[in-house]
Image (cartoon, rainbow over all chains, first blue to last red; front, side, top):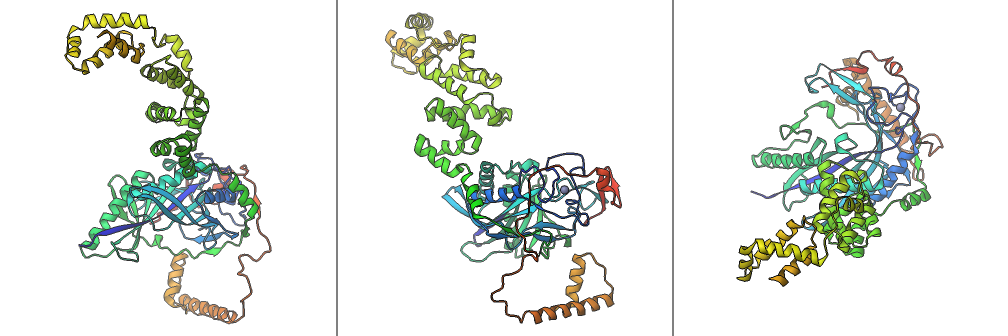
Length: 478
Length: 93
Ligand SMILES: [Zn+2]
């Protein structure tokens, strides 16, 4: 029995966050009552003429540069013909042989180190309308159509078939999302459909060249469903081949509930789009100065930023990867460092208590009530010994909930650490008197008893005793 | 060479219902058109750029300004069938 390897290529659709649609002035705003964000152009009424939104071209170039693509000098729009009521014109305006950008790449971190995934092309196109069915598409007696999304700008990013496992596919999509978010051209929300993905997958015996027959999987609206559906599909294909069967080139849809891919056996999905240049739209000659200006306006990208964090701040690679995962979190971190130049201490707090509370409450870093300055002040209080690390956690939770400054909370609650030797000595004496057993244990050489006694001192001081001092004084007394 | 099968395929893609004689006629006509292109293909186009558009225009842009849209009544005015402000279409697959 041969060993198989999986070959995957992904097509990602990213919705650009422009104000107006790609070829008309209708708003791109999400939601809205059905068929209210439409005009003669996006409804495909006779005589209406599309004109491309300049911001869409700029955003496409911006994303393409972030993905290391070459920007075309000459580009044009084409009609992709198909009969399906999600487009009122019976064609979708897309780009065929002269896309805005080609030949990019994206690096992902795999178990075997960094892997470069090729990007074949990036092109602009319009989104389609939304169909509403009663029940499923095959059982519904009719469909209802809302054209509010028709004409919303998209970029499609096509990868090379360089991915070799469902996990790599998920990593690629996550990295793509990170990079696009850094560029600011989309909010990349998979659950709202502003980032979507179709996958092409085939299997082949290890060591053979060429490709097996591929299946295309649609309807992947989360990273989890992407990875799960590909794992299912790879196994299905291998089982089919092992049983002496043949893979049929087809489109399959992922059924999240059943956890399986299902064939969409329909002539409607036949890929015969008869592309032709759209005569309503004139070609684009992309000015090199424009490209240079867009390139100069890009922020530092996550890969560079991560490397810089290791080099400049001496952070472990793990910390650097998490901190640079979103631009907002990385900016937050750097603001903290400016106010309190101890990167590792800040990183620990961000990756620890801060991230934990953000996840718990489903809040983004941009909505966090603890400002970088306030987090820095909290760490200063710990650094100076005003409060203990343990108390700091309580203070932080309160800062997170109410947005108050650390000093204010410490003052209001009287949480200042006790570093007065006389006060601690008194507590130590009391603890020793009340715990003759552990004292004997310690004297008999059981070090662990000391930990217990320190704990008792901390408890008696309501956590406010300076733990190092308590430790030291206990040892002296014993 | 275009066969009757090609014509049937293209007719299906375009949702056209053709009669037998029509299929024969279009097969003949489409082959005539192709033949004419073969005649054109004899021209030397070595130094001619492919034409992407017949007008000498490029880079016609609109600004990213959202505003113009039409009322829902107007949007649905030409629609043969509607329901709850949606366009209503027959079963698709
Ligand atoms: Zn419109």
